[in-house]
Image 1 (tube, rainbow, N blue to C red):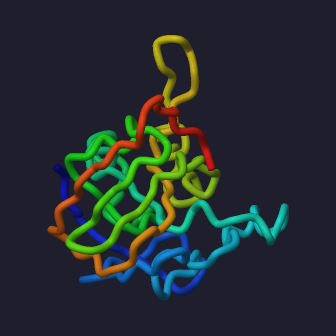
Image 2 (image 1 turned 180 degrees about the vertical axis):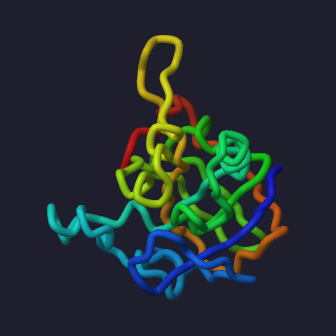
Length: 179
């Protein structure tokens, strides 16, 4: 069992999202009032490619442990500073399989769709941050550490301090890939 450390949203295309005392998730849409809310893609680069594609990136979650690691390396990051909606603590987000359900607080449920693919905006925020959220595994494969993306199955409020319950999908599990 993990917990919600912070919640953030922005109604404009800003890299950093201000922290809030609460966000409301809307089933099939995302975070109420967030620029990325919607049934179809809202990220500018994806809209240019295909504005009718489904929005598999309605909610962005980052593990607070990554921010701890980045701060220890000299990066000035705080919850919401790299665009996430939910900062978690105590959940191995990157180790979850595709289709994992995360129960956030008493009502909301999101389904993990994949990994956030880090972009060069990270370096515009802080020089070298893009490289810091990428790594290599023992086999030499690229490891993306910038969090996961999800869609909202059941709406509801999410607040700092809320519990997170992880519900794994039926096996065989499928590893997360960038979405």
